[in-house]
Structure formats: C-alpha cells, structure tokens
Image (cartoon, rainbow, N blue to C red; front, side):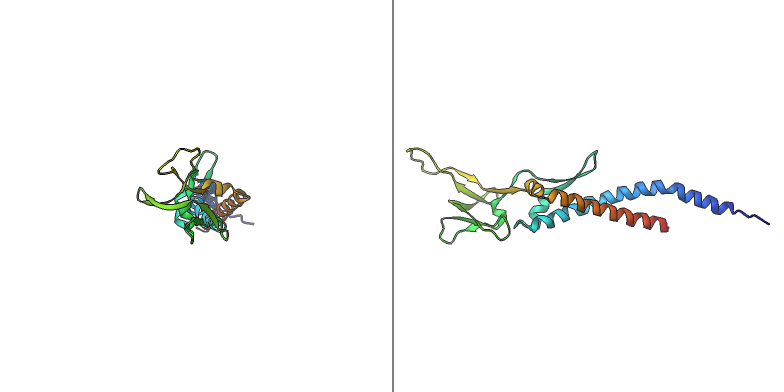
Length: 182
C-alpha cells in the first residue's frame, strides 16, 4: 500500500488557516466602519417616526464616536429650536402653533418668529412682573427636545443597540464568507 502526502497542499491549507485571525480582525474593523456609516441613518429613521423633524436637522445633530469601549451614538445636548418643528403663527395671531410630536399640535401664547443672525428663530415674550412699565418686554428663544433627549427616550437606546449589533454581525458574516471564498 502506497501512502502519498501532498506537502504543497498541506502547506497551502496551513497557510490559509494561519491567515484566518488576520481576516477576522480586518472584518471586525470594516464592520465597525459600516456601523459608523449606517447607525446615524437608522437612528434618524427611528426618531422621525415619533418627531416631526427634518432629516437634515437630525443628521446635523447626531454623530458616531469611537471610544476605548467601542462605538457610541451621540446626540447634541442643546435643544432643537422650535422653528425646526414646523412652527407658524396661529390663525388669530395670538401665538405660535408647532408640531413637535407627529400628530400632536402645540401652542405657545405670545410666540412669534424673527430673523436673528441670518436664521429664522421662534421667540416668546417673557412676562414682566411688577408695576414698572417696560416699553419692550424681554424675549427668549423657544426650544423643543434635544437630539440627546430623543435618543434616550423610552426603549430607543435598546433598539439602537440591537440595530447596531445586527449591522455588525451581518457585516462580519458577509466579510468572513467573502474572505474564505478567496
């Protein structure tokens, strides 16, 4: 009985097996890059199901940050101006109508729009206490919830974490299968 061992094939298999850890590390890095690209889009779509806010405004306030522990989805802490929530003057001109949550209208008495620093901003006149006559009452800007608050609301953190995990696992599977076929 003749025993024949193809040493070249055995070396080729050993080489492919030794390359697997490098391919796994490369797949993990690429999957994190895919997550950095896709996660803000997933978060924007989830926020837009609840809030009446434009995609451009949400995109401007959401970013993905890489830390030692992994990847974080971060929202800006400053409140979104009420003007971004489709606000307009009321029909009787007594205040400001707006839609922060989809399907729910809000009203601010004494609210109005003015241009300030090149942007159209919603303001409200603040009441003045006492008998002192003030020719022009002070005004303050009107804000809705911030994107950080929107990201923390309800079970959205869990949904975003699960969506991120799904993106990473699907991408690692795809990349590993692709690298093993080569």
